[in-house]
Image 1 (cartoon, rainbow, N blue to C red):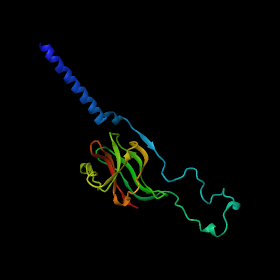
Image 2: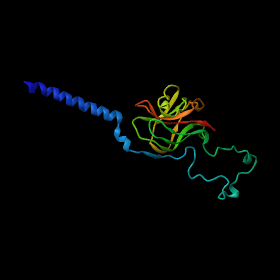
Image 3: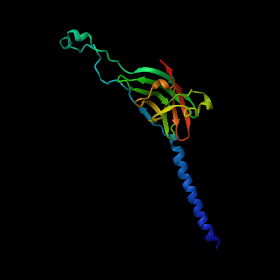
Image 4: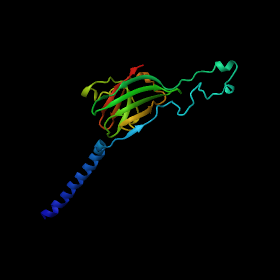
Length: 195
């Protein structure tokens, strides 16, 4: 009789342990500690292979003439830097540069350059109004005020771009964080210093 009672209890314990292990693996994703994802995106708003203006390849006969020739509107050469900052480490060692850019079409993007941080579950790039604080004091401040999620972190290393949604005023925000949404903690952050 004792083996009959012990058997269902043993099966229940094993089932609970298996479910807990599966949930724990999903939640913490420990294998990401050893996986690096490198992204190398080009600087947005620049055209690759475009001929430089006023180059030697232009033929004199192809040059426009008349009053409209000198009155052509000037177009920006590329993205304009509005603000920039250096990433500091929080929960995980993090380094790199953050730039807030206005593209020639008037849209805005956050660019991470030379990013180097740990991989982790559910990492996001947030534009926030929170102050960047050193050490543990800065780990949890970024969800206290206003923030805009710019999407999932594309990779934990390299150069990458994150477009601001239409209607977001970049002047309202003063920092960028690599935010772990699963555990509500900053991996690293940068104060945006206006250009």
